[in-house]
Length: 334
Ligand code: SF4
View 1 (tube, rainbow, N blue to C red):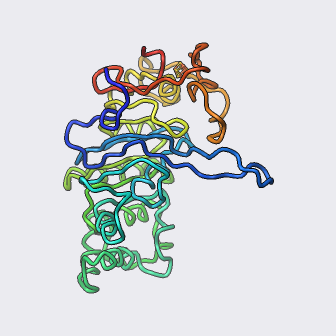
View 2 (cartoon, rainbow, N blue to C red):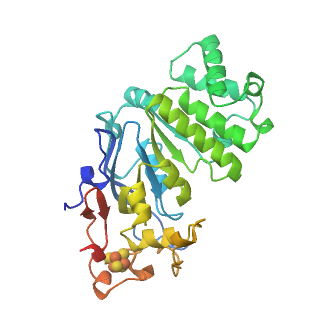
View 3 (cartoon, rainbow, N blue to C red):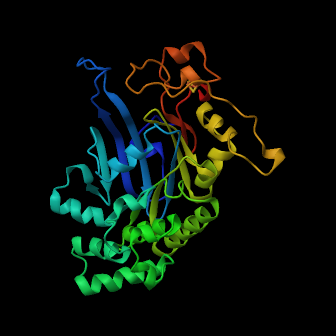
């Protein structure tokens, strides 16, 4: 059993495509209406993980736990406060403008709300083509043809490629979002709640499309979601975030069948199941996630943990390997 390291935190079978080490994103905040500064808001507070080529790492947890901030930081769409992000051996956080442009081609993102990234006055085909031109990957006529091809691959017709964003449904728009990412031929796609705004039947279509594309192209996904059943379906490994930290990570099946952290157990107890024998007793967490600006002492989950012991309020459990390939931050595993 080891202690928490970047490489061990969410160990992959193969070499890392993406390696994140002690990632930190703090925001300065002011308390109330006064100008007095409170402590920093610790949106992400020392997160480490790896993603191998062709692998899906699911990142789960309640809203406000820091998942999206991790995704945006990895792509440097926001600037982290500390830590390191290495992609294909290159230091993302130290990259200059030209290198970052090349990296962005290889690391793409699919947002929950694709319409926010589309120009309402341009056809969706033009929006996809524009990404190719900005990256210098195609001239105007080639880019249009390539956009039509990519949109066709995600299930949209040439006629739909000529549509304005408001003329398409939510599911069709998410296909456009995926096409925009795919057009650049990335190796890694951060999927930030890509189906949570869609109807269930459309969700399944989009997830199947993502799985097909992964099989075809060897894509790696960092899949951010709060729907645990979905995450289990799509992920090779899963990391559970609470209050800016990863509290458990494991291969997906092991984490869902035998969670090692009380927070994971509570999250899973709320997942509906069709099998009465597999039904878990619902664990209702009391209270909200504590403020990320509050001073921390002891286990961050202690105020809500049904298994908390006296020492949980005094000491912070180490994130460590509790079984081969399984990591958790909880004294119950000692
Ligand atoms: Fe609960 Fe204590 Fe484990 Fe934290 S260390 S999750 S408070 S039992």
